[in-house]
Image (tube, rainbow, N blue to C red; front, side, top):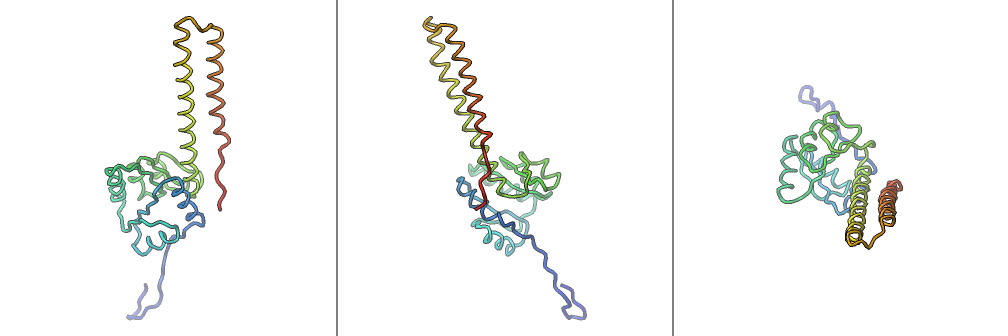
Length: 196
């Protein structure tokens, strides 16, 4: 606000705009079983406006950069696994403190260095897709380990007892490797969900 002789001559308001896909991203986080929170240094009114636009029910405003890390540490102390998405210098400590720090590709170098994962698109939908892909990758790894152990648990006793021909054992081992590779290649079919 600019005043001249106790008369208001102008008012200037600066605000960040909410991306059109943010509400859809928050809905996807919820669908993934996550609880989205907004932790910001902005005023309570600005934080509430953004939270309302995006569908976030839990927000904390007026938080200093170091205090963002304290909020994350408090959640971790309660037994929660915390992912933090940020893009600024003010987010760097919190990104490093979180169990999973996700930086936006258009963010500052400090935020990118402090994070575990950097998104190529500055869109929260990319964060939801990254979490989906990570979960699918972990499920594939677990399936591969299961089949590898199952093969060994079945084949080793048979081989030790002399009931398994070495040619058959070698062929089964090769087929086991082919299965693991083929199962892993299914991840190439992963696609981002369309915006609805």
